[in-house]
Length: 364
Image (cartoon, rainbow, N blue to C red; front, side):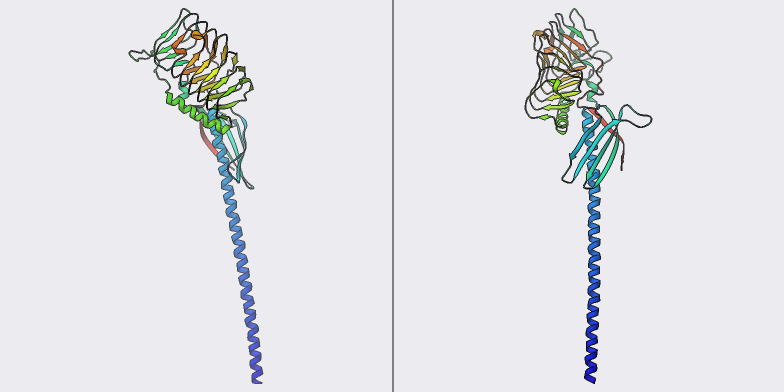
């Protein structure tokens, strides 16, 4: 009887131990499951948070690219960027530029809206930017500027309908100069009264050209070798050429900026492009003869020349010409006619040097 009781107690004890083990195992399984669930939720939340941050960064990337584009062409409007890949998981879905929609509106302010996306998350950033002209742009004043020291001699039947800024004497011909002459005396270095005698520096011009290369790469119009263009076939935008550029004339109202590290040669054919800007580290050369040319801005780190004798029989209309060296060697004769176009708006022409300042930013 005693042995039977011991066996019964032993059996009950084994059963209790088994039950206890099962309870502990169940608790451990529940705990492990809970911890796994929490870990997955935490990991998922971390991924979501990271995706949200990347979406915001993508939207900010769109804002900064818009600033770069607008620094080249402040007249850009509409959808200017679509599906720009930032990294393997995030994109700038869309960037749009519109006029100021606040009350009262400001004509110098634009509204930029950028949508960034990462996985299933989107962020929209809206920035209002004030547009302006950089310090150097103010030196690209309307008229003709010859920075190289030396005279500007107009003779023969040359007609000059332009303001002139010269680092030396200006000698008019019998037709006179239909414009205001601002000159620096080469001996005393004293400028004309009511003018400070300040010229752009070649380093400033070259910095603009470097900036133009960066802008063109971002906008997708970067050429690593010499190119030939007919402006009639060019879309609005920035074109950077690491080499020489040949322009075979054409007619367009599109806002275009062509920048070259070599020379820019305009062939002896009509060129009517009142919104065209030309910038080069070399020389801008108009193949004079019977050519008629119209541009908004021409800036050369070297010279601006006419290939005919002293200018030939040609006409050039421009908003501003800036030659770091000389305009046609400082000597223009023949039947050349230079006319300043006062309708060129330097606040909107496509060229590097415009400023963009964010005055407010919101996100959602």
